[in-house]
Image (cartoon, rainbow, N blue to C red; front, side, top):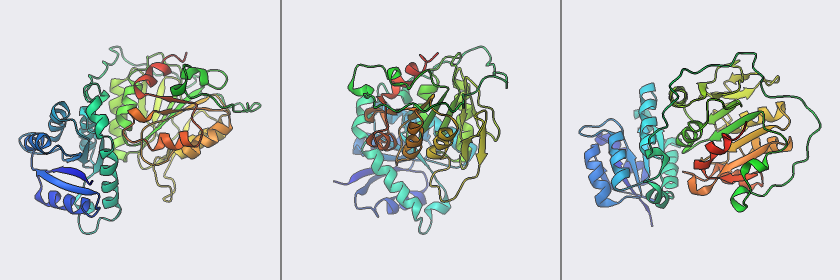
Length: 383
């Protein structure tokens, strides 16, 4: 059976164009249109589509309000179309918090003529989201995206001095990597899978569904969290800037979009900027931000960041691979594991798209498989 799609957009041109693009794939069928958010809510209840594509700037009822109402009344996987402006990024993050599962940039150029790769990307994203329909309906009442956000700490944040200790880069004798029982299949705590002593740094990679997952984790960490964090989220540049500012406002720890030569500090999360690559410098004290190679599919890439840490630190690294399409992160985890790092992956049930974590687990690289709602509290036990 084809995936049934409701297309919501106040532009007749975009409605027709989205329909034409989607229906080039025989597995997709557009079953209805809405030209504003109010009609979208009504059509969602009437047609019960498998997926909804949603514009955000519309008359009568905007896209964010429509997402919120649909998730309350007829929970459905929703893909947001967003502009690549800073305002578009801000609105998209609000929509994800309201319950949308994913987003794509929207422009006249990418939707005109033969959009090529843009068309394939839209089709693939819609099909991927359709597979999460049952999960969305089961968990909509308790989903992170619809829960109130944790109130940030009232007191101002303090930034550790530049001389604060960074991750150890001492290249001692390598510990052999012993296979560990996965947390989802035993009664062990994921903390029991840590190789050796407490890690010196936490690495987190994510793609589709990552913004909400990262917000869930980072808002759970105490202001006393003692480790530095490197974050890699597949996002355009304007989005990573807005996302870092949002996280910093909501979290007790410090969060910032990384710039070249940023110091790696305890209690600070550095987010790789969109369109760039973030690497740990050879001294382990700071990061380098580079343009990277056009042949690398993802910018930023989880593999690139994880691989740079593997070359710099032996052991004492905890890496997490979260929800996302594809397999970015698998090769980086291989390098990390060879040097004695610990790798955790998000479980399938709590992923928006179980691609990246599955690739890591299928390769036998995951030491623990964890539900996203538990990750923040488990990390908070590191002291």
